[in-house]
Length: 310
Image (cartoon, rainbow, N blue to C red; front, side):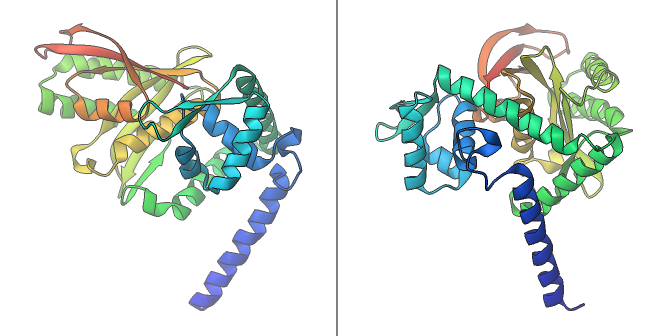
């Protein structure tokens, strides 16, 4: 088959899938998920509800909507009391959109309907078929958005052998770069073993970054309770730094927490880990408390707890 024929077949397959999926999720319905809002309006409500204040420019960047169309949607939300605007503290020429109490209630109902719809779509599938679907969807996303990913890097769930690598990599890298001793590696081993032994795919998540068949990063989302999750064991191998991989791992963790329905994420780190701290701050985490830490043999260590409200 010629290249042009290959391309034509791919185009036809994508269009066929678009027709199937838009019908399956009701994109063409007057009200998305049987509610009072269109799909575009529902997406805007999601973006505003998911942030602690967001500018119209940021909503446009996240959704790709036209500025005039977004303005009409926001005005409707304001009339209905779902969204309020206030001057931006960072830029007096801009405004910040915030969800209101009624808006959060409307979003919660939208979230409930979304989860119910997806559960209805996948309920006929067994565990193996659901795993295949998850992998296939991830592959579609990687292929269509490959330029946005670190070159040659993929994110995947943990599998057999990964937990040993997580423990070893933490011990070696932090020992070499910060002088942390065997006590830190032992702590990582306990955390990692508990994560994999008690892993709950409905509430938690794991991401191993892999490049050319070699593990180069990781992060885990652990359930603390039904409203709070923990970000655990973020690591990027020195050979893969500078690719934006740390931010991508954190973003994947945060997105999963939002999908599950957690209200906040906490994490524990050390003040000397400046690169990681910058990633956390850029993702919206805020430093809550700090205290001296001598547990790993490092002199003058300061432990920190950070929190992100979703």
